[in-house]
Length: 273
Image (cartoon, rainbow, N blue to C red; front, side, top):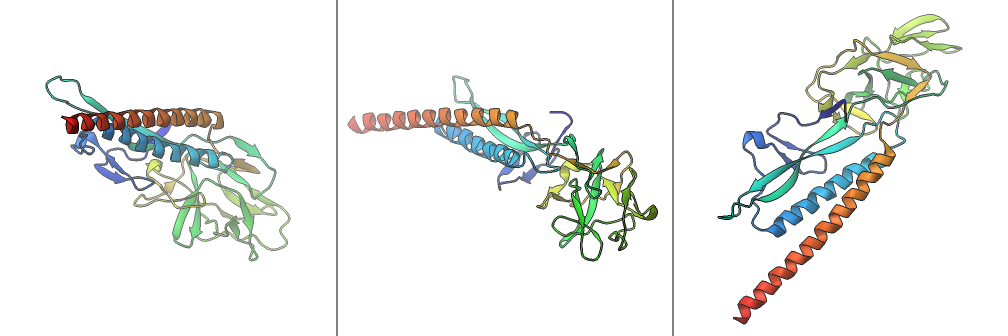
């Protein structure tokens, strides 16, 4: 999936969505020791369950403006099994990928529907502080400020909300973000980009928290008025992955059941002797 970005590159240890931990093999951190094949099967089911969560989130946001699809990254851990030299293999999840490609652009004709062509983000003033978004479905509040659908003010280049004068007939927003009311320039949108957008943390409602990254003025981004960026989730591909995960989980379940019966049989033989 290109271009795509790894959310957790180069980190020694990180807590990922869903509360599970990512080990980085190159730093010496290893998954829990595999004591028997049943542990291997159970670990596989755990990975598949988390993968299903990611797929379900993607499918639920197929029609969400500006949503970026995600995938999981897997790695194989091998452990020797004694003199035979045949290793046990366990697959575990180390991180996830956020697809940073643009979603399809849909023309709406609404002057307050905006999309960004490029790597830029709109800046908004959320209750928890400044946040950033690719969702440009805006509206005017009672004071004439440009706000998100949830009411968060959209910030201008100077860091203050942009207010449209009353009785304005035509709102025009140029590709560089300049805002005009009845052909009079009244401000400019703050469009920023990040060196590592994959490290932006989801903050709900399509907003991103920059964490410790400093936003920079967007260099090669264009604002498209009367346009909305759609989700880049590919529904058919996600459904295919879901079917594969379900089949894999069922196969792992059968293996776990067979291993359980084998252990019980072994116990019966030992006790019987």
